[in-house]
Picture 1: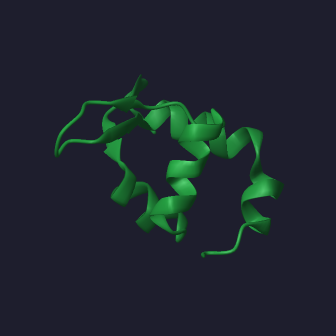
Picture 2: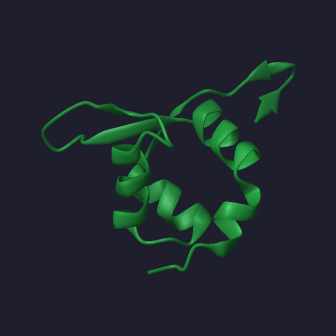
Length: 72
């Protein structure tokens, strides 16, 4: 997302991504484990965070693949 020419590269939670993409949280976690989606595990209650730019990259590189995924 761009705001006045600057990228909004905030950290997203797994829950925020599941809500946006309408997929199960285990699907997002599998993408993280498989290396298809890059994130950082902050540990404890924080868990994984994924940058907005990484989610954008992921969606732009695999649009057909995402459309095929069931919302398991």
